[in-house]
Length: 198
Image (cartoon, rainbow, N blue to C red; front, side, top):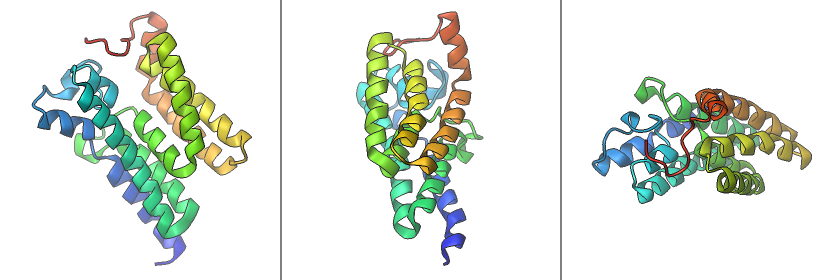
């Protein structure tokens, strides 16, 4: 298969991996209520935490991150940086709009971190440090993700990775769009804090 022919495969491969709803799978296996009926209705780790199952929330976070990392690493191994970036985009889109859940998925933060790990791991560390420091001071997961994702493309551009900066600018815009209701709640002062049950 030629390099150009592999690129659509990388995108599709990333999408299929990204669309695996680990939060929903793990909570169902653990016998909790349908995750989509709890808290924000999101299938990500923050909402899993609202079930009171910290272990499940951690497992969801790790699995959602790793599906993004795996997509990038495998695609990059077979066809280089362009395929890796397309797989990253596919994984992110798959998590946001999974085929199996009628295109209603998560908000993308864990997968964002996962693909960062696969493409340029120092940026993933920067993201996590900014997320953690914002979360520690504000106790808002959504605000922490928004701040960290705003800084990430700037960091990538500043350190000489314009292609990655462009990709993550697009991912960050999508992440902001997926968090539009959270932004409204933050403005209204009604957004739930980390660890808070609804």
